Length: 240
Image (cartoon, rainbow, N blue to C red; front, side, top):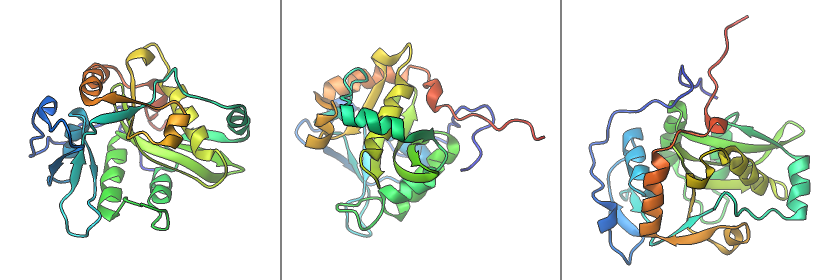
């Protein structure tokens, strides 16, 4: 893991050269709202602050695609569904934050996974965001072995989940439980846990869909919040 910023707070990179426009004016019928730009840290942060996220087209050499779903998947922090078996798994697995970000990223980007989308450019971009203190991993461990986790981007009260993986049953779900626990604080009501699109699997965990306009209104409130203490990277202590 790279050293965190000196004061534990994320470092604001140079601003992007690209303009994402007014997110309330995006095409009301299309999730894909922009094509092009780059994956510099300032560009990524500007995109998330506008309600967008990137994804490769799937064709080498094509420009980056940027999405703002018409129906956005979000997980209410008080709506996470934790089954009895998941509670048992939570007792059996250890949750850590930011101790193996690159390993989580690589596991999520395993080319053998179906519909894999994390290419070398995306990997490099999120490693840079992690080094600056904006991207985080929530990991699950068993007997000293990484068995699951997720990663995403935290800006104020927004946590934009990007991908998750598991190697043993419930390991990614335990990471999600760990993330929600770290987001629950005095500002929990206005924090925003974004999962991009809902799926039947995510819906079973409590994810709901909200219209783009609702998401953008919640995003504005969330961005004004302080980062949750559970995701602030602790600076290293003095050397012995």
